[in-house]
Image 1 (cartoon, rainbow over the protein chains, first blue to last red):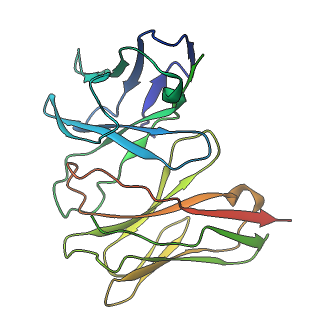
Image 2 (cartoon, each protein chain N blue to C red):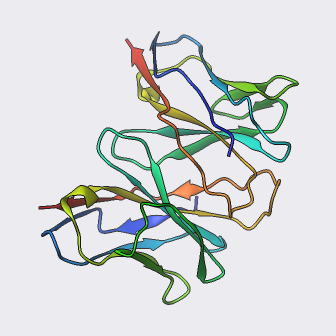
Amino acid sequence: EPEVTQTPSHQVTQMGQEVILRCVPISNHLYFYWYRQILGQKVEFLVSFYNNEISEKSEIFDDQFSVERPDGSNFTLKIRSTKLEDSAMYFCASSPPLGQGAEGAEAFFGQGTRLTVV
Amino acid sequence: LAKTTQPISMDSYEGQEVNITCSHNNIATNDYITWYQQFPSQGPRFIIQGYKTKVTNEVASLFIPADRKSSTLSLPRVSLSDTAVYYCLVGDNSGNTPLVFGKGTRLSVIA
């Protein structure tokens, strides 16, 4: 079964450092997402990406965050200057191009990257 | 986006059927109802999706009444490995509309 893969599984970084979280979505999917989950809290939407541009972003996704799809397969989330409160699990997800109202367009999630900012 | 309401937690013994009900009073005509499962330190995993009436797959059944203002996820004969958080989500499957997760229902299966 195809899956979304994320690397690294765990990243520890010092406050103020830049981190890049990497994801390889399922190959025929066209919609890509990043979510985060702070320990013990709910899964929060960060950003969606389609046709090489951001289609929607939440208020969490401020200027410190950016996304890229540099080579047609990888999808990355960059945090420019990490803060302690950025510590969380970050999940990448992708979904197929079935269009509005179509059944079967569920999102597939990766196993996540646990980011710890110290 | 339609908001969903579901119980915070449920307990069940192994082998029993578990039904988790979700309310989504403001569901839109184009919206589908989707349930995800999440184990600790893992990403959410799709369980089942439906638009109306009943949907069944190898894992669960989803019951949706005619007014679509609620839905019930049914897990037959749960085992300890079904202990997880279950999320009910509503959306139009367009891809451009991101999934909005609530707090979910924490199911604990007891031996």
